[in-house]
Image 1 (tube, protein in one colour):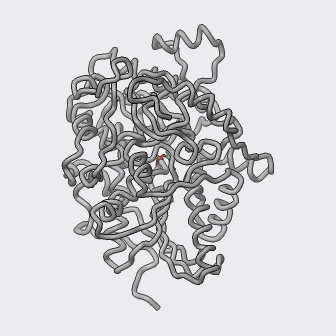
Image 2: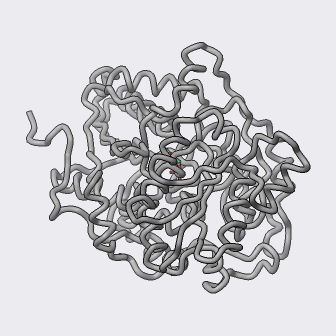
Length: 460
Ligand SMILES: *Cc1c(COP(=O)(O)O)cnc(C)c1O
């Protein structure tokens, strides 16, 4: 018997009141964003044309370790936080492992994922700046939903350019956005120059994330009172997501639990960055050591098979360029890839940490991921998002290694969301029609060869 509860929650008093900025503890800072034309570091003024002022300050801040969370955001967090830290007893038992497995579940809000943690922060700073609204893109739909929830709370307009095929195939997501008062616009649309151009060139085009980003940015910079918001990759997003790691750390400390291994799925890197930040801080300061594992899909393996270089953040090449592990902005994961995490690049913070050897990365195939998801939902009850299931797969593998060696390691992983809106992907898995596609070296080389080379960016 132990006095540790099955699920560890924090009291109001124990809740974090600041975000943790891991850059303050990094010796090698992530490389700055650069202007895609001049290749010079972006100035705050340049970035403020596209992003909210205060968010730009956070983006560029690499010295303040703690950034206070404004009271309005803390109040919003109270509606769905703390996220529980759960001991996966049933999973451990079923696996027969001596390992102790904990997961931090971020799916307990209507949008169904961790993305709301940053959405509310970004909406708050937009409101504070006196803006009318924000624009953004959404692919699978989680970010658009989260952003519309946050904007509804603060009475801001939210224009979501939803990739046309997702708009048509995921009507539930679209309706959630509309119910919260957001506007979902199928992209490519006829209301931006870039959208009209793509529609003229490729009639009936089903859209892409890159195109939706270009439309959202164009609308924001050509309309008074609007700015663009992004749900992953950026430093500011990892900062907001540090709430995940801070809560997990506080919950574990409360009962003297120390993780040996910390695991998260990696798309653009925001949930993983958020979960590991405070632990990484201890590691960077030499106080503790943890094994940290990023898990990515074998069909979009930016950390494990990409190059470390400056690249475009979007297919449309309108955003600033970022130094990161990348497969090339023109890389498209195979259409049979259903499991999310399709982004070609990676957060520059995580890229730098990985480059410096502070974390590991591995890639997993999607049928293995869905097998792990099925095993998890049948043993632990919760239906996981396909993205989150990448972390589940790695956690199970590590727990099985412990079974072989008899080591009682403590594993912590991030369960980023629920799978309710991904039943199409589960259907393919259940029907046995899901397959794996691993890009060949040539597929990757082709996209990598399109990364621009210039002085200081030619060694990849
Ligand atoms: C968006 C999303 C991810 C991946 O994004 P990151 O920025 O890499 O965290 C993972 N899980 C869920 C449920 C998501 O919605």
